[in-house]
Image (tube, rainbow, N blue to C red; front, side, top):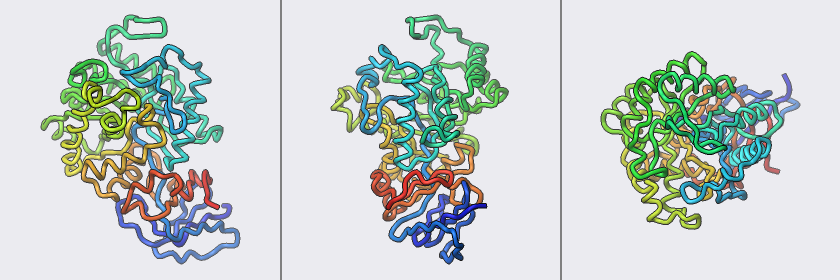
Length: 419
């Protein structure tokens, strides 16, 4: 069965929500063999022992709203993809291989920051770059989080922009079915629809619902037939309700849910996941001036209003037991990939989560949205393990500094190990 890795001497936060306690975590191969509160693991001759004194052992983090094909990451900020200020990125599109290289770079940066799994919120282009990236990571050909790949988002406009300019796009239930089926055939795990528009594109866009109830239902039926999940950008109340009724798995933003939508979400809380993407709204409101997003622009983009709405909505959804996951639309110049752990701090500061609740959301609930044995330190789960200097269960901001990540293990392999 091979030698073991034994994490000993630290406090263990297993992701379940139970308090962190002194203990050992034992790994053999790519799986967790045991978690032993109180420690006392009997040594074996070939054990690789990791001394975790002064540190906390916890599951690898899960990013629930991931855009690895977006171009900006720490150390690699690209201001040419910064809607609505600048979208010249699309005028000098990288080749598929160049875009894959960007995505692989971003994937490594995300893993460097403790995220061992990632649920995509959509590809930037129709090219199946994420499918290639997911498969290369799984094969060990690239370093990055284990992935669930998502299609680019379909907006249901009768005119769509393509590389050769405007082109007609069919709408209606049959056209939506065809899109879901085509994306499934390309190998995506999930398909994304722009159920509502966005204020970034035009004033009042966030309150425009773009799909009829019949189109949403057709998408849900085809997704189940094709064996893929449905995700959506939805801010308008009616867009949220149509997504829930049609069986969508993950809803992004959800900012303007009305009382009826909140009740509907609660009624489906065992099948729905929410990712508010608070990180990008915070960045637009407070950290965008360098890139042309001053207060006036943030207001025009709807970010000020959306952030205020989230601060009212998400404490209520927390009380109702909805599965709300950190994941903040990282990949823009003012919100680069690598800053993802900041979402946990925003959950605490803005939504009323305790640090332990925020950690549980990005580990245990993250494993649930991935539908993989990750997000918990428990027997037979993948050995995705972080050793974090200090106590992130009390102070989640510790996770924002990669220097505090003494060990990053993914599937039993050390991605990082302190000397």
